[in-house]
Image (cartoon, rainbow, N blue to C red):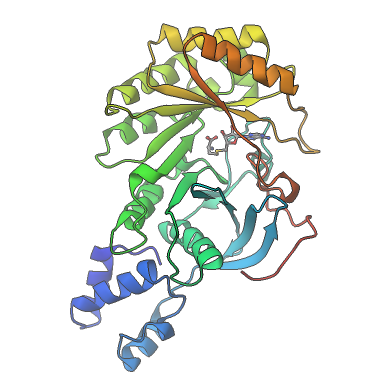
Length: 354
Ligand code: SAH
């Protein structure tokens, strides 16, 4: 799991096997989404046995699955060395979304986020990233089952994707392969808390996913407090990177600023104006704002905004010509919503195995 075409080709060359074995196994892993070599019956039995003895198809184990009243599912998995990995399936009328993790835990200390409390456990490998998606697709649509209207992917689970850049990009490349999962970059969004140098690097990629930047404050003093990464890369640097990224967008393409609305902290009328000023001052045009209502938790010192204030905040942005959307919280009851992934076992809707 996690090997690309070239690596599989090398592997089979090393085993003295013909080239086309690489293609068969690539399809077995990523197109047919098989869970063991045993099921790859297009391979000779002796080879299947040899592969099973020497390598692994699966690198994650599903520990529990939680199902929300709104249909959202949260999967709590473990790496082979015991680290938690969480993945969320969010069903939608038009298109389903899978939210995956790029790291186990997270090194960033965003004050309003529960994942931050875990700290960084470790980076996930490309295989651990890909397998999350395979586990979810197989659970929802059956092993190898067709996805009725394709799936969107968002790198918005545990971790900071741009601090695990290489493995993330490798995983996305393998997942884009049309003889595999065939999830093309246009259906993928990577979210960063603002690792500025990586935004420039990302902008240079030829076939790259969509970008979302978690902003959540329009002034340095407040952002320093909410998102300490801002002390390293303050808002001006972040905006310069956003401008550079915007230049690489094609006609009709946009990028996103995410803004978590924290009651009485960053949701005033004045702060909405400040956000609009910031965007205007930097001449950003191809941007939309996703307003995320804060998902509260006992360990977090924040409360959600008044719904009336959410409406006003959005209206102020719109009156300044900026598209703004309020994200509907999903899976709050099972700790699956934004900022709630902390490998929790609490919800009592547990089902073992997926
Ligand atoms: N580290 C990356 C990827 C995680 S995306 C990033 O920060 O962008 C998770 C999103 O959920 C981020 O936009 C984050 O700001 C938001 N978030 C964190 N805690 C939240 C909370 N308690 N309620 C709502 N959104 C939250």
